[in-house]
Length: 447
Image (cartoon, helix red, strand yellow):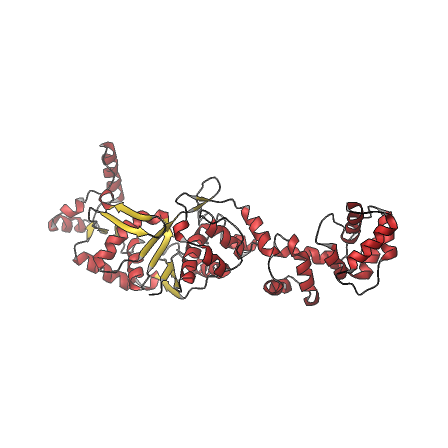
């Protein structure tokens, strides 16, 4: 069976590069194995979930190169969760609890004071029907906990190998709040089972959740997916990433001019056996990714690595891929391709191409650093048309006239023609600058 994977963000903030990691690992796994990708919006948090954030998630995924095959929203599926909750109640696995948060906190402190683990003591299971009725008569509305079997749950993890969680050391999790709304755990299991998710690939912070969820899958009589828990991206100093604080949001990275391929490469290859490098396409990245080769250690990354990756992506980007964006940046169609091929090796962000268009089209204030060289250059400046061999022939003539060579020859020419000490190969720029502008700049005029 072809795999079905899912990425299940909550639309309560903008995605950051840490969210990009599971999204991409799922999408690449599906791509490599002929599977499909489900985008499921976990929007049961009614107060903080917004349509604006939901649309932003779709925009961010599309920018990364992820187009979901299927979409679902938990807010549309409450009736399915209600049926599952009723089944668990009938089985005696979902039971009502009446403690207030304050009462639970007092119990937790007592247990800690006695040297006991601070897990729920299942006091609600000891209540008689009369005691429950009395509490409800007082106005108490129950929340509902899932009764865990006190055993270890084990699975073969795609990343971690053999993994297990001792559920005897855990509190029975609350699945339904007193207001009737669902916490993450039950809807996630129900959706995975109902929608046919075959592989659940997510962060290692969900390992304990998996132990709990396996028991819920089993109680509902649903087939278990294959699980994989990858390490989490952190900042270089080990700090976690927060969606609500906007650390390295995909939106901000896009607005800053980073290429999606650079972001993909960093988000996926950091913390794996593969060296972090610029990988231009999703297909090429899918061939590299092996979940079994992801490290168990935290995946620390330096955001400044994006700069180097971004530059390498641009340096190798073919004109056809850049053409539409150059047009949007105002680069004339007739000049766009030769300018791109001349300047791309000097770019860190694609928008910087406008600086080199300004150098070509002017006006540029020339810097005359050596009048002997520039006078000779003006005297020997050949007629148009200019081609690939023009620069070599011209500089040979200047060298023969002045004796200047190396930096003493080329730097005065660069300063006069571009006003800058560095930049693209002048052999490629000269045909774009043209004879008229070149002559005026060599003569010290702004042109």
